[in-house]
Image (tube, rainbow, N blue to C red; front, side):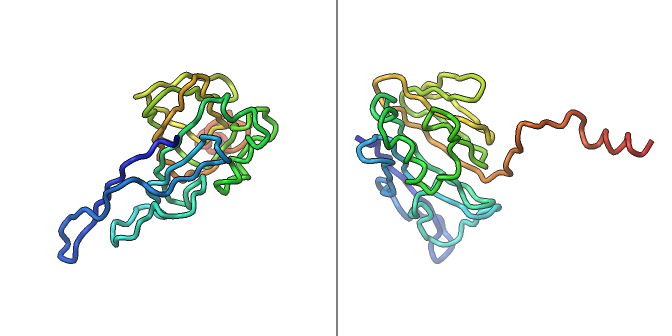
Length: 195
């Protein structure tokens, strides 16, 4: 069963006074794959920085997609079922198609969740535990742990018997280049050229 979250929203009344504009179960929930247990609950989205707090439109009520708009953010809850429940299925790679992200999976990886986005992600484990997997290594994250994902190729693995629930804020970011690394900072190069 997908974990449900209460979402309380604030706004302003006609006199500019602060008020509550919504309080209830977040309704924009998408399960990725039939009965997979892999699900996202969209809570809020911004499409610019700085963001606007004007109006009373529900910015969480939109078609779920993985990445935020350019210069924007997305706030969501993600529920990962145990790997045994879904990763061996023939449709395991279809998660990306379900959220308009067919461009992010690492098709060279045998891991159906390995992917890279142009985002900076702030992640808090709310319930359960999950492994964060990178090209070089992995770390077990437990409830209360924080993970800052900086545009890296990454995946998730729930090796236990219970789902893991995480809260995530994705921030639009410039894509990280390929494996080539600059060996000398640009300022030093410029100084060297002047000599």
